Length: 430
Image (tube, rainbow, N blue to C red):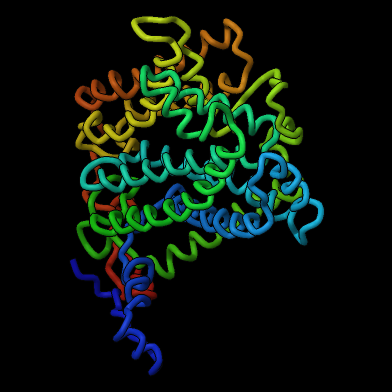
């Protein structure tokens, strides 16, 4: 489909023309995010969070590189090197807090991005691979965040590594050798710290590479939109620049202002105080918890308490990993031809129940495992899997959906007639 407003890239200087003939990188960027890329005109602010995720990835890479220049990956010196960064390195405290809180904000915008995809059916054909690559990015984020959590080598870092790597020992036969291979020994120590530091430094660049694939896959079918209706004419779209660069830009400024507020006034609000105590293998913390963005999965793990055929710990580990792997099957678990939840009233109700269920899992994951908390975790875990494996397939076949608009422009104009006008001019009133 051709667009009259889409202007081809034309270098304006002799140097630009010379460069374009030999390495047309600016032309590629212009076609990907510039005035040459058509975007549905009805995107709401939930579509801003993909750009925000990329922004926080860049913040993490830049601050991580600076911190790596001063960090000492030694079981004897890691904790002190972090204190050295905080106290003696110029703006070291800023880099450390920006990196730690940047991880939390990275997960916040990613979770909103994922749930936006769930609500608006962004996983449906022809965008299945876009969805799956996004999940790969999420899994890489989890691995990177876990290894980064170990590096300060505080009490929660050490015992978090002990607990998380202990999951692998739940697998029969191969579990314990796999855990020893991962740690480089029988417990977290120098070998584990060196390996985790190396992988934590490497994986963000892998995430960046997969992000490029994610964007590339997105550009083939084009962006989804709140109606779920495909682009049918030029009136359904706008050029990404300047319309969506402006929209993304001011919203990014708003989120960065909130990020700065947390960074300067409550930098430890999302952390754990036990991580300011040096790691001690002989002193177990009273309550071992992962970072907040892992708490729903921690609740799923704790929900399994009864041995049945296999050890309860193995069932918990399988369920924890299965809760994410299940999302890869979502394009086939939800065969409804209507993409957007805005036109699926039954689906919409169960979607918000799912959101509440995940919040309950997150709350339960951060609590001491009393019988009541375990029971709540079990109910919430059962509903999570029932939503995707039972409820979603049933309602996708039986629900009565709301009629879709004929086009994206119709949904924007609410049925009003409007004559097309050249880009940058206002159409005459009827």
